[in-house]
Amino acid sequence: MRPGVPLAVVLEVIVGCWGEDKNMRSIEFHNREKEIKEIKAILDTRPTLITFIYGPINSGKTELINHVIEELPEEYVVFYINLRTKLLVSYDDFIESLFEMEMESEGIKRKGKETLTELVSSVTKVAGIPINKEFLDYVFKDNKPKNAFSYIIKLFEEVKATGKQPVLILDELQKIGDVKVNGFLIYELFNFFIDLTKEKHLAHVFVATSDSLFIENIYSEAMLEGRCRYQLVDDFDEATTATFLEGHGFTDDEKALAWKYCGGKPVYLLELIRTDDRGREIERLLRMRAGELKTNLKTLKELGDKITVKKEHYNISYENIVCALKMFLDEEEIDMWSIDEISKHYLVRNNILFLDPDKGIIKPQSRLNLLAVREVIADV
Image (cartoon, rainbow, N blue to C red; front, side):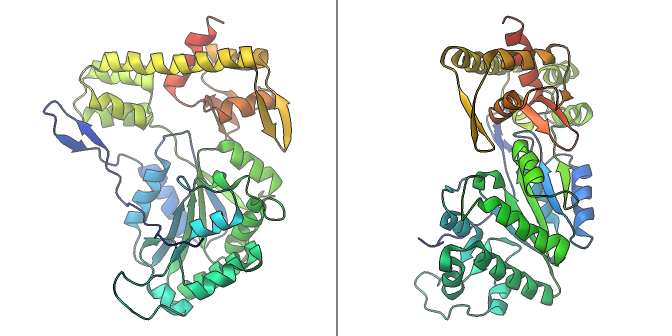
């Protein structure tokens, strides 16, 4: 199997919602000036560190990345690969996800791009990594990651030679955590990222993920101390949330109610914008989240569960999970060392809690999650 479908990226994410007149409206990209400024400051300097773009689920990381890409001047050549929808069970799967095959236009015979210079000339502002059949055969030869990495280095050097700056972005990279090539591919990959940034200063490398356990594990096991930085994309703060909702006709009481129950989670705010009865929608969202948590705990108590941490299998303790969640009856966040490692991994992997490895704290994935935890645990 070889790549055949271009890895195109939609640069503008439009979210439709029904207003009172039932006409479709778009939700604008809203107030990420701080994060945009920080990312652009990184891009304005020589590549030296890997940048992790991380945050709770549905906090807007991919939308932020797309927005930054759209605003970049032409001297930046961005190679963006989103692994969210890719099935990755082998080395071939991962390599295929990186490259965009140069193919003949349908129905038109033309000479393919044969050199790196010709391939670079075909690169659009946002694309997968361009490759032709000859180079692709080399990349897959011997099933070795170094073949793919050496090709990418040569391509990026060619981009640099044109006076432009290559930028490599991999979204949802945690999906390759279990792919093995004579050991785990992930460690080979991060050594390559270090080579691109800290050693060769050739390309900016951004890794986006909602899986903060992935970042924590990679940091310790891939020896990333002094080789990476963190860029948090969190839910909106209260002022940003109020401004956003005000632009969609929310009254002061409705804004206060939305913040109390949904916090600044964009995905929940969009649900409130879509409905006429916002109080009822909040009740529904909280009821659903509490129901999911109750089901999770009931299943764990009656059937048990296991989790794999560092290749070892561990039983999950229902009592320890309840004890961990009870910490949030009076606190909105706790330090990450307050929970035993098995419970921490279980609660984070099940998207009940969010781990911030940079700040060293754990908190519920959203305000709604916090309220659901308090409602359910109070009765346990």
